[in-house]
Image (cartoon, rainbow, N blue to C red; front, top):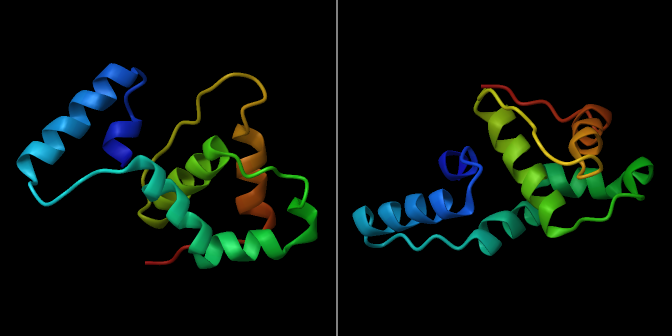
Length: 105
């Protein structure tokens, strides 16, 4: 997930997916499923229960940001949020800080 998200080009992302699926025969990578699973996580349920974040619309891209940020923080991976103005970079960071989601190893 993180490997494919580090590339900025959809064609490169597709190549990485094909290579992983070719070398891991039982693995079928379904992005929609990967990013929708976060909706069942304890962190996501906590955020949804807080009224201060009720204004956030959980689109596919926001779920993707939540999932990736969560994975990076959990595994102490560095991350760089890059995107157009208004795509949710600041909002998703406010969600993690405001909901007091903490990861410990």
